[in-house]
Image 1 (cartoon, rainbow, N blue to C red):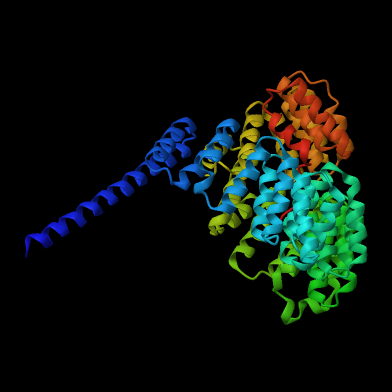
Image 2 (tube, rainbow, N blue to C red; image 1 turned 30 degrees about the vertical axis):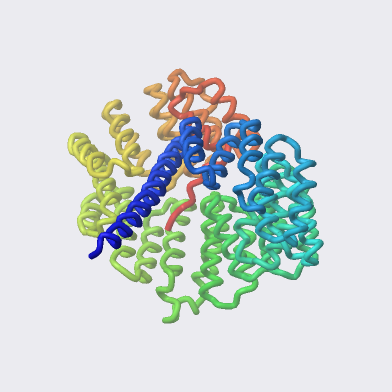
Length: 576
């Protein structure tokens, strides 16, 4: 190869390496600056970008990054000087956009709006540029100006659907609630999949101005779109206007009403759930579905202590001969659960273990699997304990093998030994239970039962066992037995238990009377206040009581429970 060719190659190689080194150096510096920005070290990042500009004065990226730093750190003089010095290296559109942003950040929205109007006109109100400039105004809270941009674009494009969501959001931020609602609802009309988002936005507005619900109501009444009516119903629920919501749900597809009924049932809003389930029964012809709603109605009655109404509703299910035909026998366990609930209702009304046993055995005929059979066996074992038939109870409990039922089985085995007065064995079983099932809701019951028994003499222990068996039969006499024990022992823990049992048996008046006791033990006194709260039906009074307690007892071990009551009433529906 000639010397001339080698020289040319070396020259080109030298130029390439020089150029590569420049680009490589700039990339490294830029990367370092971005890392500092990520750490919010703006001053250090600024110096590196200035260093890049010093070496590479046409680097437009560094100009933009420096402007962002100055805007974030409110260094407007620096931003203005930088933009004046380097405007020539920025693309014309980008330079204009940065000038508009600078005016906004300087607190000159009128000048910025004038400049943005001219710029948008030159760009034929390009949608992306409209959004960009509107976002600049919103950055400083100038929502009226961003609103004007969107509305002018809509007018010039002659498209009423343009920027629906953007206008709605800007109007919300500007507290123009009626405009925001009309835009949100019009957007939802065309975009039904967004119902959850729009519902949430409407709730935000109503939290600030509840009277705006009339705007939603008027729109829903004039609309034939079911998604608008569904939103209105959801909003009514959020405003606790349940009866009105129910009427709206009746006009919607049936699955929406079913969801509403189930939500109210699960939330413990029983009277509204009851009306919803009763309406569903009236419009449904399928016997199984109709009776599944009847069962829900019966459960509502039961957990509110309306046992005669529970029994009457269940009798409709039991009398329906179609329910025992092959297509319906095992379907979703309605037959089984209706008979289980009848057993519980019979206990509540008559406290008769033989009649309850009959209904439990009837329920077993409709069990579809081993779990359902053994679950009823546990209820039968409990009945044997109330009759002091301990050998039969033990035989049943020893037959329980379903893993999910072992927790209840072991708790009943503990009760079996305790009720026979086998204190040491029961104590050992209680300890094992706590070890194996530490999160069980039965743990506190087992511990307190042992605590009570160990603190009583032999005669009082027998009275306590009688009270426990009566409670298993849902017999209110169990409370009177506990009160007798309290008279002899003055143990306020026994009195607390009597109040709890009264509540569980829907003996609310008796519970209130017990809770009026002049408590000496401070822990019992605080817990009694919590029980009083659970008996309060007036929502405002409930929250007032909770706040008064927390004000006086901020460090109480029961404070978290009281805080829950400030936002919701704690309810524990009966589960089957």
